[in-house]
Image 1 (cartoon, rainbow, N blue to C red):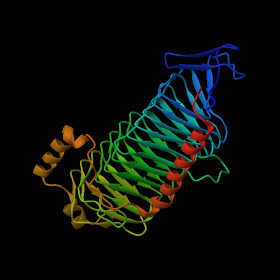
Image 2 (spheres, rainbow, N blue to C red):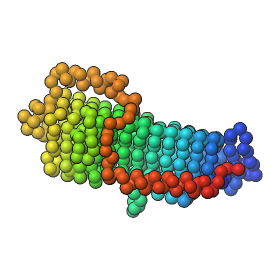
Image 3 (cartoon, one colour):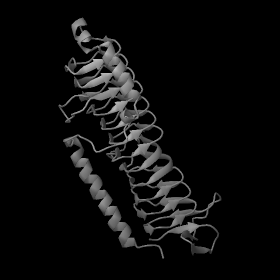
Image 4 (spheres, rainbow, N blue to C red):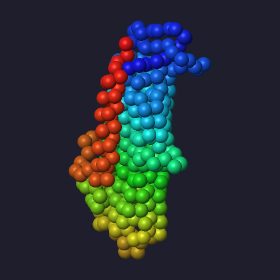
Length: 348
């Protein structure tokens, strides 16, 4: 590696698993460590910086300050704890496995942020004007986000994970929520490829507006195979979309509003709504409204700890084809980062 840090000029400390290497990166705020290589089982005091186009591979590391990945840089980490916030610049990449971030993760049109069995306080993706970088924000495999997930660019995927706060996919390519729980609200607007909500639960209000292509809400197809019902704890509003919309296999505790969509949504027979249905014929609306005893069972189920999921293996059988190309690219970027970091070598 070459972990170059600034604590005091001319000082080198490497004892008790604490790393600090002196260099020209001195800052008034304390220690800053530049990572281009690998580190294993150490504590990095202060801030961590992955320089432009560099690769940093951390295993079992604790970073006590903030972490910044510069443009084109790569940070891959397993079993690592970040005690501060993490930021990723344009075309930067961070891939976390079994790791935790106590602060917010912010990507500014990065190549991507991926969480696998990991946790973060919040996760925010922002577009950079004029950038052509294709970005992903993926929260997968039992990951948890205690605050918001807010993506304004690229692909947003929640799979077998839990978000305690609100989820927003605004102006993204797609927003997919599969086998996951959202404790807050869900807002999907102006998505180019629409979105999927499959075998999942959202406990706040949900809004789908201004999207194109396909919106699959609870249904089994046309994009994803969904075998179980989805639960919506609040109101569901689906308005002004130019998309193929399919709604089925949904239990809704609040109201459903369907208006201004072209073409008209396809509503399957396995929807149960406790509130009112707006934007449909009276007979169609009556067919969706849950009888009283079903409404009570829905309320009881939604309050049950089991309904809130200790994320189990998903029953989703298929893989979204639209993710395949990007997933291969993410896997390749990860492999390249690991190889480049290994070539740079471990800390002395």
